[in-house]
Length: 349
Image 1: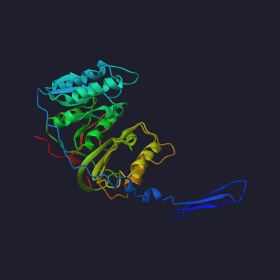
Image 2: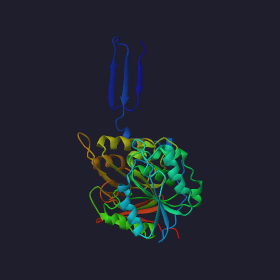
Image 3: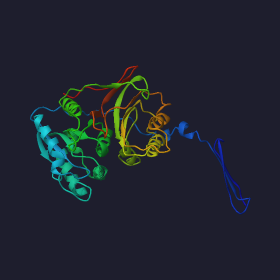
């Protein structure tokens, strides 16, 4: 019986024996491959995104829209948020599907596409706020035409499942805002105040106290990312996140630690970590450790050898505080002995 021997650098010997002792398969596997794997061949033709399209800042009297691309909402879910937008001096229109329901979704795919398409095609709309996250935004991506949007760009604001739309826009060089949505919009007044300030053209730097999971250094680059589960789910699709020469932001909720490891392994093995310049770790809440590594150790396993600055514990994500950050544009992270600071480029006129 023929013997098969696969030799990859020796570290662990695995032998499978059958009834015929001559039928033996021997594998020698290098268990350090996770740390040494350099998959540049996967993204070797990918170029960094150098386009920067920054939507104009808002002014009192501007028209904004509230859209629903994912899970359904009731009027009571969003009315407080809509009233706050009006208190900022904004005029608000609602997407045609805002209160529709089709199972978990805010209407059928056709209804959700129509509601969002109408908003991005409207040249008078200066910003689009999302009702909530959940699941469903990726379903509408193949059907959205961004032609008119690129002619009249506007701010897209949301987090969680809206990450799918952020990635699509950021890959085209368009800036967007990872921040509060209408459902739970008033959970944290600081987050609302900072969002208002950002939209009206005042990009304030955000600092947190230094902690032992931060890595010191200063770097500037295009900021991309969002919810880790959504980044992972789009891997290998036409909407895959471009991280070339970028600073990466990640956050998530309700995941087991091994799931976070699995998603980061995907980012590593698909080459998304090869050329990143820095990392911002947002809020990871309601995760379960069980027999897995603690989350900081998982982060260190994938990013610790990259020699990049790391801001750890930035208050953006699914917790009460959700300080808005600008994706798709220039960002600087600076970490020293006392503070970790995230600052953003100048807004468009």
